[in-house]
Length: 248
Image 1 (tube, rainbow, N blue to C red):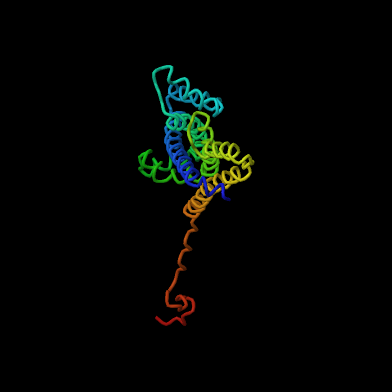
Image 2 (image 1 turned 60 degrees about the vertical axis):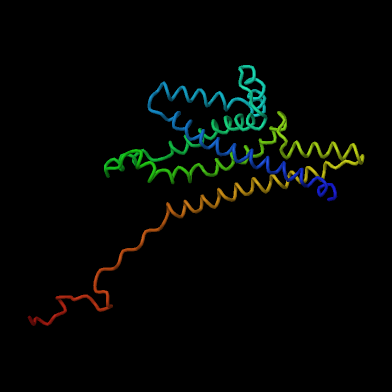
């Protein structure tokens, strides 16, 4: 505990860097996944196959290799990036490619007859997709997309390889300093703190996804109101001609 108190400002700053890295990566990955998903589902075959090949190539590259490639290879073509930006770009590329496959699966799972029904009702295809189908796609892709988001948050630790002073790198620095000054091994306390921080962040993302999924499910499966029974509303029995005694 004294060790955590001593290095509390350093840990607090590293947590802020981890959160900033996670937010930037998730936003860029989501936007990139949407764009790539529309590319791999494009009706034009050359465009569709171009995006499919691009997505498959990026998905086949390990995240660690992609982080190193973006940071060390781009400067060779006169594109120099700082460690934070390089990490965001590399993680976002990998997240966009994998997110595109998730969104593509959600799009292809929709009933094709919905578009025909929308056209019969006079809806423009884009307007029908935005108003009717987006909520269905989001509900379908939420669980795997939340899993991808948790993976990307955990992958921010790879930023330490290229010099980003995030939570993992800060923990390594604290362990080295405390070991050299006191001679004790503080790795258990430091890594325990890192475990708790990543658990809280990933659990919050998973919880938010579950709440949104339940909300969309209630909206899409709202029960229909039963029809009102025919007849008088004041509780009187309906008039029956056969019950009359023949008087006009």
